[in-house]
Image (cartoon, rainbow, N blue to C red):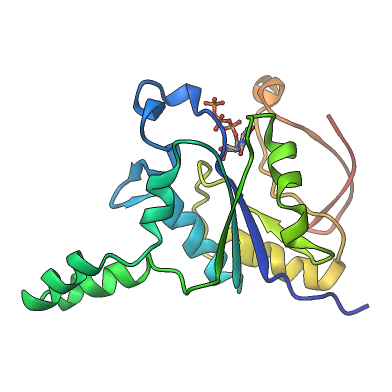
Length: 192
Ligand code: UTP
């Protein structure tokens, strides 16, 4: 059966970020920088590479810096234009979202990741969708979500990106009980 294309992605960013305190007292974790860009930019780039067209953010109080990040910055842009800094203007372009391509929905209490995704249910409707956690940056030659979207087109169903961990570290992770091994795609029979 031909699968519907995955065009929507949910970014749950309403957590308290306690592991990064005190920085996250006033700065959303997703705005924190890794090398030269905020974490959220990696997630957006990955989603765009996978063909995502609608970006749904599940936010909470204190995340306005995140909303501003995706908006146009007229003063900054005109200063850069006047100074002839075309390269920097190009860099800024990747941070902008077209009007209507991005939606923010509120999770008014941090009731967990599953609840955060549930908060986006009306915007998702009955469409296939991706969930990206911006605090987990995955380095891959072909971006992880692109691999998943391609796999979904083949097999359909629910899918989760997984990695191998040493047995002695397994207790720190959610663990899959795997069945049929098809190489990069593995059937999950159960989950702990
Ligand atoms: P984490 O488990 O990393 O939780 O959530 P956290 O609150 O961000 O961080 P710590 O554990 O307190 O340090 C995984 C993802 O789910 C989101 C987070 O924002 C993060 O992107 N999340 C978590 C929500 O959107 N709502 C929640 O209630 C919990």
